Image 1 (tube, rainbow, N blue to C red):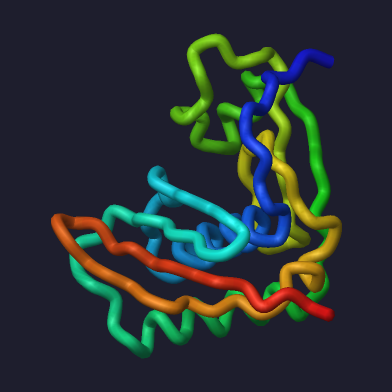
Image 2 (cartoon, rainbow, N blue to C red):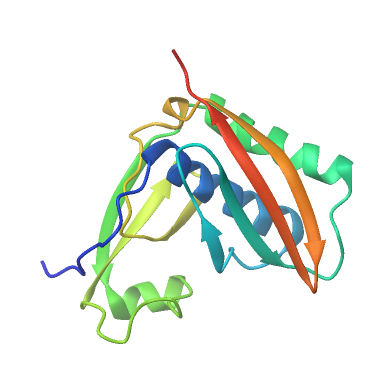
Length: 152
């Protein structure tokens, strides 16, 4: 099976939390997954194209829903499929021009699925507590900054 090489070393709990946050934003607001993300061990930020700033209540609800999925201890599994099949189910516009003919899909239980070559936890309970620590809206972009408190 041919797959593209990966040139980053993500922190698996934060990277998996990014998937949950993206899935939650898509479900709650119908926006696309964040095209601009910076995910790190200590602090992560994602930007979403948005037509208005989120309210404090909406931000707390996003946080609540992400933590709900973490508490469900969902399995995080990888699935491989031909790029043609993946294109029928997922947005592949972020794939490089020289992408391999096989795409890896990361599924988080029944909650989220998307193409990804990054590293992830095996179950969502490994993520710990998710907190949105700040947000900012400017020029049509809603930024959400999050931190994790890892389980002991």
